[in-house]
Image (cartoon, rainbow, N blue to C red; front, top):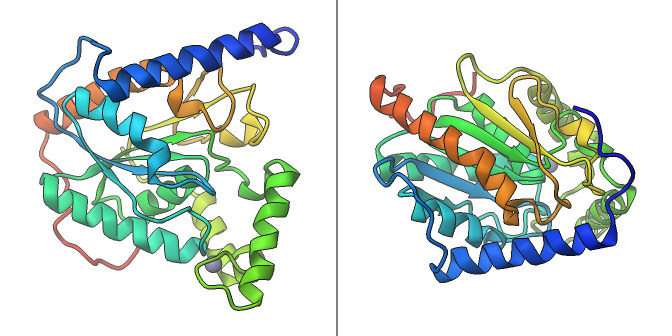
Length: 264
Ligand SMILES: [Zn+2]
């Protein structure tokens, strides 16, 4: 797909922001009525982006609930911790939500939350029905906007001073980095559906880094942080969720109950 001619006009940018805000207001207030299948009931785990909390995905949760799905929050705070530790926490949440819903769950992750979710999908395919990433630099997490990288590096300095729960040097250069990047470079498990949503208007994550070779890549028009506030995102997500829910019902679910298996 060709990039849009020229940069976005200020009017178009403001229109998208206002349109997105109205869309979200409709989702949260419940006043937006959409025709939606209500018999799907997929468990969906929502993983926020770097520096964001679960609150940032409340609109997505509202939309999922409206369609009859069962969203749950990742509960990883502001997503500023060690990669290995966060992947383990998301994995545990996926286990809990799979237990609660009786089936593998769909992981939906924004930005860093997307590639952390991908690592969980590779480690525990028995827990994961499908993967959705939004503006996630799966091809090179360090290739994002230098300002974001400076913020992340600053956290490692705070960590070195003893502040707990933050990224540290090992996450950028050590074993934590090497192990996780190696897993991220590999393909997704056979047969696992995946959707990678990206935007050429994204000024935080270059869109090329979102082109997951194991996923169906879909372009939307959005800035980085507002991607899950855009109707286009939900237009891409809705038919795929319905398809995954149908295929779940038509086929036997993977044996996800063999919890705590060693990563493959
Ligand atoms: Zn780490």
